[in-house]
Length: 345
Length: 288
Image 1 (spheres, each protein chain N blue to C red):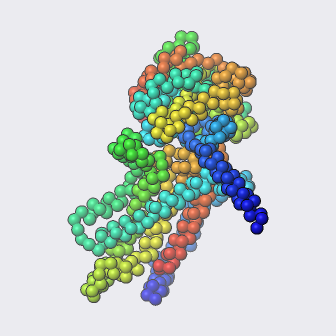
Image 2 (image 1 turned 180 degrees about the vertical axis):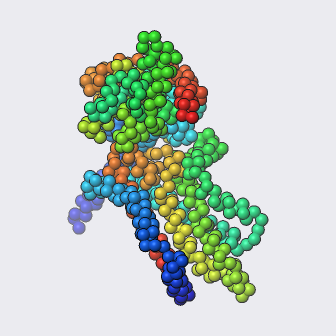
Image 3 (image 1 turned 120 degrees about the vertical axis):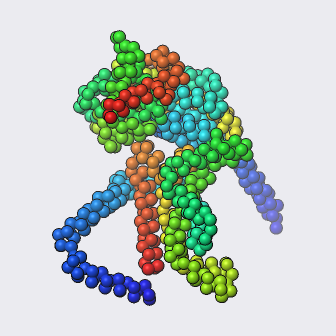
């Protein structure tokens, strides 16, 4: 009988401990974020999400799971407009985020000024992937316009990457001696005459080139080309970096409307800001995107080929203008395709 | 019993037919036709099926096992089963009701009803998906009302279930209508004239005579529900582990260069098809 109070005490202590641990558990929330992204960032964000969860748990004790959705950039923008409620959009080009602001009021029109470096924490460029030994001796853009070279690229109407491909070729032709809009159009047309398959997204084109073994050269994102080399074998493919290409700037933004609905605006912002941190920039470089941070860029610079880069702004003004001139109905891409159609008939 | 007698008669009939020189093909013609059809069968049906399993096991059992026990695969399996589990009962109720109406009664607009039931067969699944986006999407007819009330249909589980119901809509009804039309209304009329109520007639007379046809329709409906890609792809939003069904999960894995895993999950679907085929054979055998 004498040990009963002690026993009772022990019981109370145990209860208190279990209560406090339960309270501690309840205090650490389980948070969710949705990241709607484009095709070739699958591996990047798989890595980055794990790193961010770890960082956020250490900082706040809350656990974050990030759900990913991937597809062609234009298609993903369409899905966001139709109601896919991503907290953040990490797409291939500024035009797609502009359309979210204009057509759907999903984010403020000045989204590009809300994060550093025009809201693009990483950049990339457009390069060529060829078969081992480079049997068609492809060195630079003019080789893609040669007779007898089969080219694979996604469709600029649906794929952000393909629009960068198209503008890179156009810019290259413009910057040649005597280059003007007419010579550029003729040059890009010759390249598209050589296109055998137009897939809807960058990843689709890659599988066409690698798995179905169609074509001599794939025009693609630099990061996608290096990923292929690592995933599918250095023995089968080579990367050819052209002398001149475009600085591709894939932007990121908080989708304000949906994040506000979910009450995750703060978390979404922190998620994107962490991309600029040393950890984020290192992951970016590891996945063959070009980091913005000078130190990280220096570390990873050597893995990329030498290329002179021009920006979209210096050659085409801005995305709205480039989109209007080249990819809207009746734009230069349609004109090229129509001429091609007539030739077939 | 009557089935057996019919079978024997049919067998004798074919024997007589084959013995007659006028209808007998030369040996080489028979072998050629048989050989061609077997070759076609092997190249277009058997080889792809084998390829799925060979590719799935290319990196060994361990990779295969990891692929099908992955949490995202588990979520895809659960979502696929959920969509089928909702679509099938609805289709059974609707299909039986529609077939009952169409085959046992005469009314105006019957042809129109039959055409409407067939609509999901004639519409491309992608269009079916887009229709739901146009109605329930953020800019669709009901989009604003839904978002005000915080109800999510498109890019969430309800959208996937709706799309599945749409594409599987005709299966049960299409299976039952010809069967019930062939059976006619004699048995039901006899039951009613003997004093049975409507429900009694349905449960005791109609249902027992259509049960095998109904099961067959359910099997086909189930196969389509689990295998549907196009319509579901449009409304899914492709959120890993949340709104991906098995066919969509296969696509994602394939796009991530996880070829062995993609084929491993595809082999689950192929196995499902084989099980379906087995049950179908069983039903045909039982109902014969």
